[in-house]
Length: 185
Image (tube, rainbow, N blue to C red):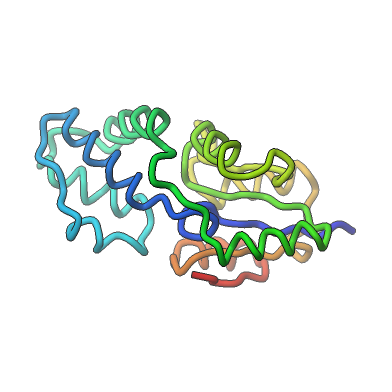
């Protein structure tokens, strides 16, 4: 049976933190709010996007909902999702090794599906990934998205390795999926 490598996107395959922060500030400015400083953002470097978004929404003192914030952020981020984004070299080697071993490679992310596809199509060769599983309107969590994708393709967790950063959210997703995982950054 085919084996698979699942790579988290942000903080594992790519470093897009500065880009995300820039777009959070664009979103705050869109709503007429003051922007965040680099030191405020730095506290969220190894946390999930939802925590960063919650912090940003809190700075607006209830003037805007999380749904409205995410909607505008996603539009801003789609237009500006590449500037300053880099591939993490350590992971590039793991990705190449997985390809050479013949593993099916899946990218998992909390980014909107369209944004993830845009980033991956520019930063990686088109043949790199069997699938890109991003946030969509049906399933909003990484866990729900990957469970649906894996069940659709009849992929068994016992045939998967999950590469993620130091984010506890990703470790929890791996544990819920009951897959072997490696924190690599």
